[in-house]
Image (cartoon, rainbow, N blue to C red; front, side, top):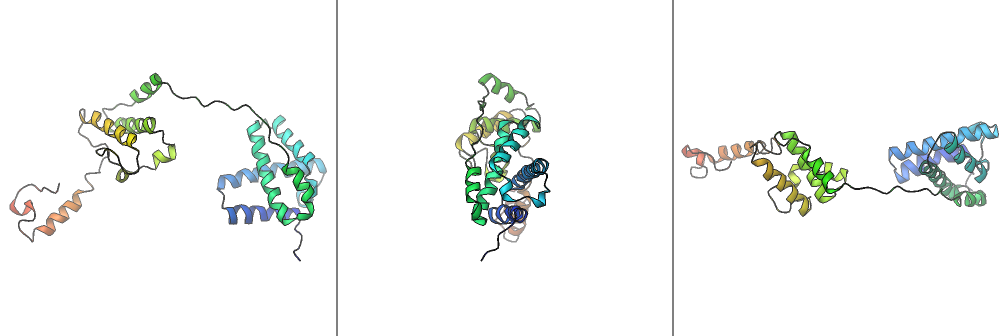
Amino acid sequence: MKKELSFPALLECFFMQRLMAQRQVSPHTIRSYRDTFRLLLQFAAKRLHKLPSALALADLDPGLIGAFLDQSEKERGNSARSRNLRLTAIRSFFRYAAFEDPSQSGLIQRVLAMPSKRYEKKLVSFLTRPEIDAVLAAPDRNTWAGRRDHTFLLVAVQTGLRLSEMTGLRPRGCSAGNRCARGLPRQGAQAAKHASDQASGKCSEALVPGAHARRRPNCLSQCQRNQAQPGRCAVSVGKACRCR
C-alpha cells in the first residue's frame, strides 16, 4: 500500500518530479510557481499560526486561498492577471495532489472549481503607415549599421515574423538575391532584396560583412589543387581566378 504523503513532501514532489522531471518546464515557470507558494505559505502561517512544515493539505481550503488572492491584490498591488497566474500555479499543484492523495478529493475539487477573475483586456494597437515610414527612415543607410537596422525593420514589417524568428535568421539561410530565400517567406526575401538594392547605389560595402571573405579560402584552396592540372584554373596561366 502506498504511503500517504504529507503536505511538505507532496509539495516537494510536485516541484522535483512533476514540474522538473516529468514536464520539464522552463526556469521562468519554476520561479513563478516558487514565488506563488512562498507567498502562500507565509500567508497561511500568519493566518493559521502554523509553521509551513506543520501545514496539512486540508488547511489550504478555498476560503484561505481566496483570502490569499485578495490580499495579493489589495496589499501587494497585483493586477487581476497576476492574481490569475497565482491561481493557475495553485490549481496545477492540486491537480497533481488529486492523484497522490485521493482522500482529499472533495477539497481538491472545490479548489479546482475556483474561477479566475475577469479583467478588461487591452486591445493590441498597430503602427499606422506614417509611423512605419518614420521608423524605417530613422536608420542612417549610409552606414553598414544603418542598412542592417533598416533591413531588419523592413523584413519585420513585411513578414510579421516574431522577434524569436527574426533573431533566428542566419545569412546562410536566406539570400537577398533569391526571389524566395530558404527559411524566409517570399515577402521577407523581396524586402531584403529591396533594401539591398537601395543600399547598393550608395555604398559597395556588403550587407553581411565577411560573407564573401569566408568563401575566398575555399576558392584559393580549389585553385591550389587545380595548379597541378593545367587548364583547370586560370591561375595556372597567370589570369584572374574565375572562382572568385
